[in-house]
Length: 276
Image (cartoon, rainbow, N blue to C red; front, side, top):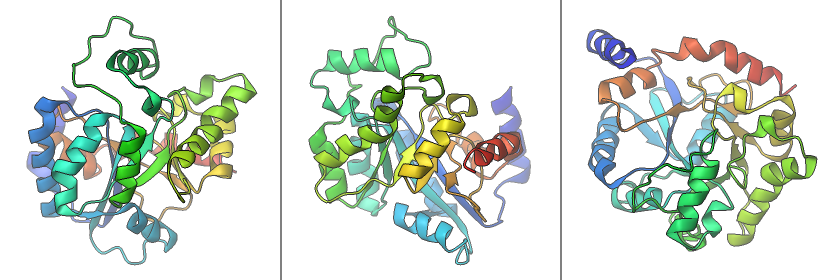
């Protein structure tokens, strides 16, 4: 029903021409979704200015003074092998640079079975031990991360085990997930400082005041999964739009044009209060 309503709205309203600064999130992209990913990127290029991570930060630091069009940054969460594959196939030829949020323990795994068990145990709020995963669902390697950096892409922290930060009671585990996980990534990458952190699951229930303050103390930017326009940003807490390639392009466009932003305004205000 939701998708039907958004499709109808988009068919009536279409593209909203107001200036925007948005961030989108992709997760695992299966083989049968690659063609749709390619088509989506090409469609975005028709109406959006796809910017680099550094351009995004310049626009936020300069209080969006230079924004005169619809700008969008591409991000990926978790560290799936598919993300590097589609980047090489479809983003690199277009010179599009993305920001990858990496679960540091995930990229250390050496076998498919290890990767699948890790996903079942950690990537959902409740363990899904019976979940059947595609044979091609794998983790990126440390070498993959290094290659992404060499090709001009950026890396951010995303905890060590994909833990839900609001549920962690042990202080050593808390610090390991937020701080030490990124230090482990930096040990892999030569001369690279991680300044971006995306908390897991992205909803308001998966973070709390303690986590928000710890992240903003150790990183320049905190990336959420709450939808919204980053124009006139008055904090370093970033709104992001999760994209599912199972949804029609009209629905994705409705999200990116802000049709549902009003749903998240109260949650964003609460998250931003925690930083004080």
